[in-house]
Amino acid sequence: MREIYDQRRSEGIELIVILGDLNDTPESKPLEPLLADGSDLRDISVHQSFSSDGRPGTYANGTASNKIDYLLLSPTLFDRVKGGSIFRKGVWGGKNGTLFPHYEEMTKAIHAASDHAAIWADIEL
Image (tube, rainbow, N blue to C red; front, side, top):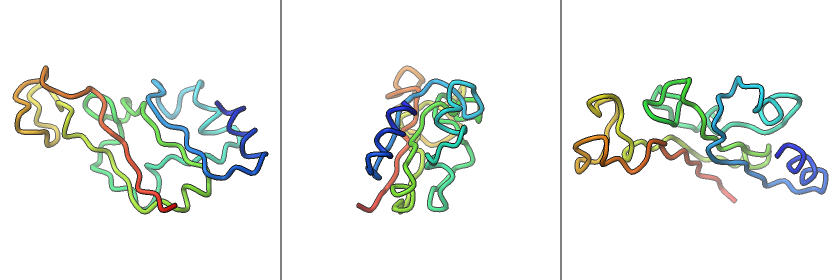
């Protein structure tokens, strides 16, 4: 992914996002090419307009060790961010579902829409 990203940037393409379930935490060796090693990609979660609920993870209970879903933005896109957050209402949080608000129709874990919360960004293009 990093090679493709760098190629597109060298071609003058400025509006690039890499997103999805990358199945690894920010400190992991496999993500170094995207999050370190001179990369200019920026994680939406560090933007000043990102609204955090105190849980950085997107998987399961949202702990830091469960941060595996990403919205990584090129500098131009990052500069255009107007907001963002993690939407957890379709995820069952904790043993009793009480770690964060969920849809009232979800009365047990099996009713959850996913075990991943949605990470989103509002970007002015």
